[in-house]
Length: 416
Image 1 (cartoon, rainbow, N blue to C red):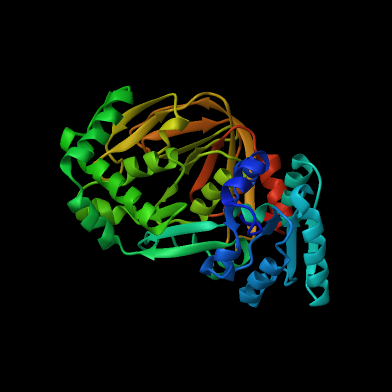
Image 2 (image 1 turned 60 degrees about the vertical axis):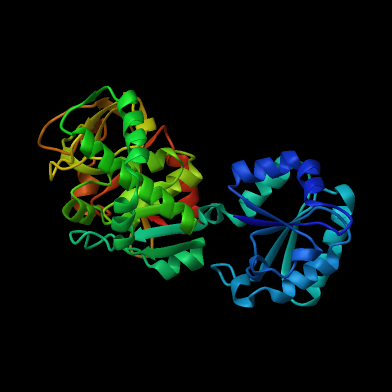
């Protein structure tokens, strides 16, 4: 969510951040808002060429400032997914903010643009903002696609233009050669520090050597550097190409990046990554991407070779299951409540969600390293109506939040 805060030339950015500290903090924390304070001196910068989700009117005397910003906005970008032009303004009344908002609202009406002022307490403003804009705006961000989806993912793509227009998610293609070059250029000593930190928190190390650990850490440092350079909120990577060409894995890198707030998924699977991304933005939770592996009428076991370390009670450092190469993570998970979720279809028009409890965290050499068994029968869904292979697991019970989001965006459950 992008919010422009408008202030007059009589005030400073520091004044605005101090005067509205509580409201700004709530907008940033609860609405995941990206705040830009705009004064006369920066009204026509490139950041003002796309309509933000809301304008916060911080002071009076900003009417002409708003008009100048409006005149450089790309008109096509003023349309919501439903095709309506709308402008949302926030004004709590302090510093003549409501008076300025009323003048701007009348200006918008005169040029045929719908406007709305959100006025009241901080609680009222935040709740009304979420209700008015819908939670779809919370997904806005940049996703990096490191290589193409894995060859076996023949039904896990997403319409990237739809993502941009409907949910404000920009997708960036990143050549895997950039990752390979970064791995080779990463200093040995920096990677050794990352490897040592992992060793100190792990319960045990099985197959990987110290050299394996350092190479896995180089992948992490490389991906982290590219994410910073490209301003990425999330990424998915064609990880098996790293296994075959670099003789290491991305499993450790994805685990650590997820812990640091960068949503990171495997195998170039966009639908699963978007599911993980929604879990983070809407539910506030880091997700575990996994393969359904064994099903009974009473339970379902899922497994994969990477998991956020913060998701686990304990971790064991392992090699990658299929290849026996590099570093993977075997997580030992708490027997608590979880939500199983998948948002899919090329147009993201279907979803599945179910709440369950973990009844076992087994281990078998026949499956990927981290394994969890949930007390839910997924046979009717998975064997007849499944949305792809990978699904995501979220700590806690979040079906209500997910279903609310899906209803507000016209997304239908996979089983009706």
